[in-house]
Length: 83
Length: 444
Picture 1 (cartoon, chains in turn red, brown):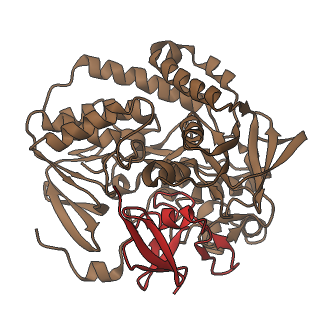
Picture 2 (tube, rainbow over the protein chains, first blue to last red):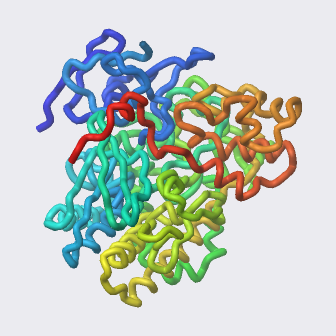
Picture 3 (tube, rainbow over the protein chains, first blue to last red):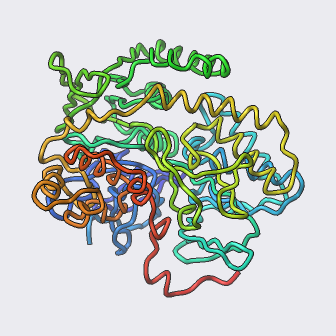
């Protein structure tokens, strides 16, 4: 059985299964807009899903530009759309 | 061995047969690459081949499997090759006598209005969420683009309980008639087709051809009928409400690492940049073999035999004639796939002036057009210098080819091979922070 863990996204608590990527955990709870673009302020989400396109980048525990499709969610992790 | 997808696993397994010491590095936390994705166990057509290979590789004493290791560069060190990788936030390196590269491929994408909106993603992304993460990307899904990969994606979603609102291939399956020999030589492929046909029927999915997703806005997808050159036909566009459009146009090989090592490249019949290899899969560089999609998109079957041949060659084992014959057969099928599922220029008319072409730097098609007509850019590189298209985080992996094709459409000059090759190479194969570089390597 997989264990449930909890992290925060822009301050809200998100529950997910251990081993899930941050992007998968967010999409599973219908949280599709992972960030807004720098110039157009347009919402962006997962696109290539395998770490190539960098569209799903978020700040993880204060470190910017982390690919949410590759990084596994960890208990207590602080995920933000931007710093 | 760099890469633990079908090609890399086959190479590692083959090399381990005579006890050759192998380090198998892979960026993911699980082996299988993008093809055999799995959370608990592999599922899908003939997935037992994956399970068998995993077991063999893990059981081989001479193979050390190093997961979550992203190789960002490699260089010659005398007669040896130094492979530098990132793992757990710090940098390490391995020194090898011989290197086999199996770096795989990623989805090829074409821009259309709204392709940057949440809900638009590649079939590979949808598949990775489902198979790798156990998450459905949406409830109502359109799968579109071109090629046989759309079948496992659409049927996989249906099996998981999503509604496949449409399955659209831009090309007609009648194009297979162009390649009768390849079909006859690969009769086993019919079994695979039948497997998917049964699943399609089970879920009442009817694939439709000569159609493409030409716009996506706020959850509404526009499906247009297109002609063989991908130009939109006047009659019959339809709009459908969906959660997800998963659109992919074949694959782009990842050639960064071999490029860094100076392995000679060329442009394949589908316009992708691939490596030149000899009959043993050896590259132009001594002691470097290249297998799988980086030597030409061909799918898992071709990757497996290429991997086996390179693994045998690099470990000094005998390659049987039957191996070479099998590769010829699979290669002919791969060539037939490229012939059957081409991507034609007409897509350039789907985009509007405000369509984002470079997703990272938010460069629009109008800006690229202006860089040519107002500022005199004649190729993608000059256009990039004016507009920043291709200068963002992905380093042009998503847009550089499309920028080349758009510029070429305006100048009416064909994209030259040199431009395609230059645009496919990067000084590092993966991002590394200056801090990680400055900290120095972990000692082993």
